[in-house]
Length: 168
Image (tube, rainbow, N blue to C red):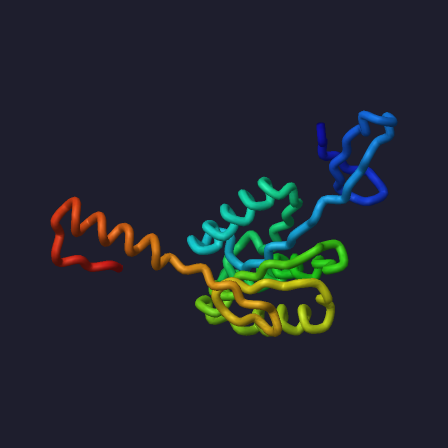
């Protein structure tokens, strides 16, 4: 049986005992970083739920890197301290990065996006995936809710006989 532990020279690992010779087999877990700017944004919550569930399925560690306050926080000094979280990213400790650039663009706080792009260009030499929108040289992965909307619309029309539908 595999069990997760820390303190190994490899970092966070899973280990088991070999039934043939009794030796401990230790494998380093893959570690993914999720970089976002607003943990309370609906799209970020959905992304986080999906990433967390996939990491559990595939036995990966996840580090979520985000400030705890909104980028439009009234205290610029406090915000400045919160944004230092991005300075703590050491890309060599991760196997890959997922970035959620849409909330960065929607908030129209380009200073943060520009600073992160510069940091990624300068320091990141591991695979980076950007969700739904370009972020530097990262590969873009599209996640559409079109199928879900089609199913909802079909249900509303066929089951509830609605003809005039407005989606906000």
